[in-house]
Length: 457
Image (cartoon, rainbow, N blue to C red; front, side, top):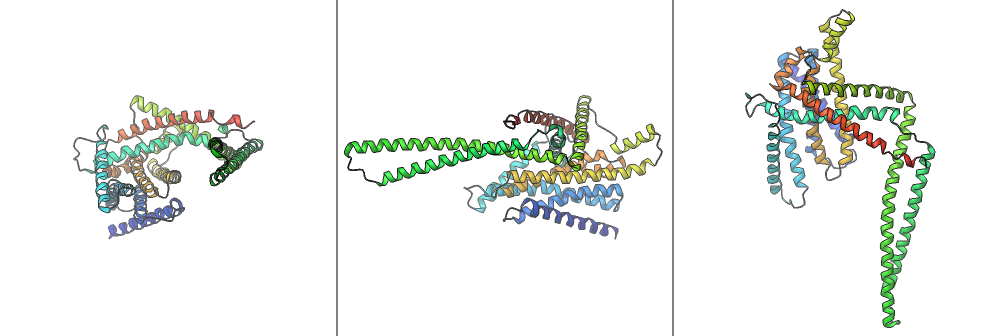
């Protein structure tokens, strides 16, 4: 009876997660599109629900909710379901929608054949992905779950490390007022005047083009037979001169339109910077400015730790919570129940990690979708984002294993299988360091090349 009650709780929460993914899809991703493909909607919502369920099971593990056997069963069920979704369902439909969008594919039979071929190619390269990495033990069979999780883990950990490295650098750069350029109302007004002057030039030249084309049309409809041979020569010369003027004017208009686009983008950047400066003077802006300094210190600390871990081939053995509690007991002389408070703090820490991970990823997915999508490619992009989201969350569970005390890692280790967990933490350190240093270089160059020379003219 306990198993059925536990299953009812799990399936009820999965339905809630599914509805949450459905609402996010309809209200955020596809709110500006009228066509919603049911398969795409279902695939995204199911992936979101299965991903959130894994995080829910981690919290249940810490709190001791549900029986051990029920948690283990639903761990296995959820993991097999999301892996089947990531390896079979999503790649198949990505290939199908991609093939169907091709102009030369005019029948479903050809589309299915090409889709199966593309999916087979994906499986081949996905399987070959694990060859260069020491992610498996030789005792694993070719059809074991470790074979799939290990490869998904490499892709997912790479995505997490890239986003974490960029976020650790861009967050203080975005929120700290130290990096903001000084923008005044006169700077914005000066840019607006320049833009209006260029727009007036474009309008004037387009009027001249229209008048020249009208003159050419009128000459073409008239019959200049009275002028004889020399009249014909003169008409041809005048027509050639007019054509040359129109062509030159069109080239000038194209140049001015390109200049207007640059001026418009600079004006938008100046207005955004002005809004950021005004926002930084508010109480909330001052708080985020303070958090920017904190995250800048965290970024430096994380880069240092990653460098030390890479050089000395070091991987932490103790989770941060237990280590912090032990420092409090040994160095500060504070006496309390280490096991009890480790459990409570672990619950809070894991909860914060889960909420921030889900929220941060959904925000990034939304921005990426609006930047890349169109009416033709939106279904394909949503499926690709669902694929990345599933791999991201599976790998998050793999990395989060180190953030919980050892007694809570057992079931996660049993479910994920006999993987080389230390490799994934070292791999995260390497990719994080590359991403963070690359982001620092990029933002430094972008900050130095900012259009400050236009602001004080």
